[in-house]
Amino acid sequence: MPFLRLVPALLVVVSLGSALLRADDEFSWYAAQARELVAEGDYIEAEEYCQRLLRYGSNDPNVVGALIDSQQAIGKYDEAAKTASAAAKAFEGYFPIQVQAIHALRTGGKDEEARAVLGELNKLAKAANPKTLNATELVALGEAALLLGGE
Image 1 (tube, rainbow, N blue to C red):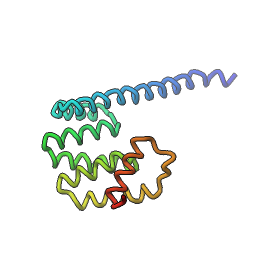
Image 2 (cartoon, one colour):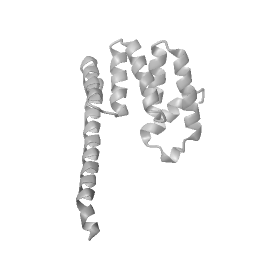
Image 3 (tube, rainbow, N blue to C red):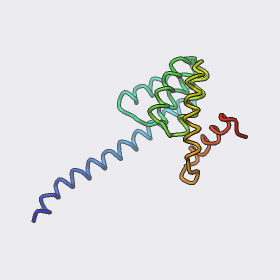
Image 4 (tube, one colour):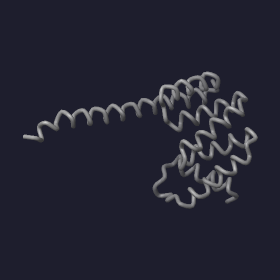
């Protein structure tokens, strides 16, 4: 019965996969909390909260987006531009963070870098199938079209 020897290993794999999914769900909850802090105007707390989440291993673009928003709101434009630059690379292909990065880079005076991200976004937008995008991505795609000069 060689199959029975594999059962414990399969159970470990399933357990690890399930734990990873729960971790992603928990980070999504934390990302929602970060967004809530930003919406309430508690930008300093939002910035600190997002930075803690990122140190703990969150890889959620919503956390990074909340961090960029909070940094801009408290006038840390250079930091927001640095965060946005890293986010544009880390979440390449995710329209919402790309559009947010372009705005943050422009606000931070990094027009050349913003144009480079916009150029990449243009390529992504041309290759995208709108039928596969969710509502957030569709809105960002529309914003990208506007940034590219569309109407």
